[in-house]
Every structure is written in structure tokens, then in C-alpha cells.
Amino acid sequence: MFASSSAPPRKPEGGITVPALALISAVFVVGIEQMVRWKFGAIGILGLLLLTIGIKAKSPTVSSIGAFLLAVLVARPAL
Image (cartoon, rainbow, N blue to C red; front, side, top):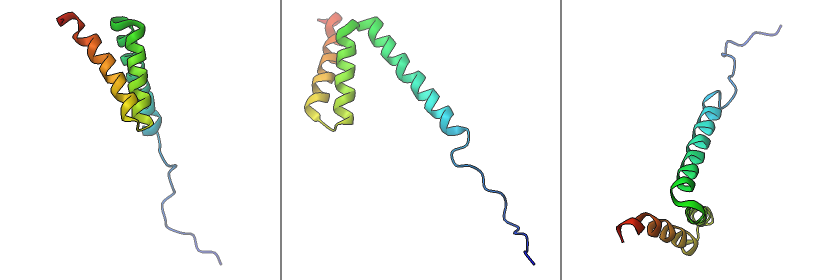
């Protein structure tokens, strides 16, 4: 009465690649944050935070302030 379908079984979406990519990106972000904290201290973290918030909020003023802080910290040894 009921014919069995010959369609292959459906795989769940995402599979293992989505959690792996999320883990890799999280490790990368934490690594960058720790490097900035180690090299530039609290002001570096503030600059990175402002830059990230400005990009996510699409606010050029906030992201520019964060980028400026990071640029000053990077260029300080040359001054």
C-alpha cells in the first residue's frame, strides 16, 4: 500500500562545521584580546572595545575613537 521513498535520509543542518568555526573564532578573538591586554594594557582593551562596539552598531564616531586609541598606542614607541 505505502511505497517506500528512495530519497536519502536528511542530514541535520550545520553538522560539525558550525561549532568548529564558532570555537575557532572564539579562540581567535580571545587570543587577540589577551595580546592587546598584555601589550597595551587597559587603554588597549578600551580601544578594542570601542572599535568593536562602533563596528557592530555601525557608528563611525565610536569606531573611529577606538581606532584612534589603538593607533596612538601602536605608534607611541615611534614618537
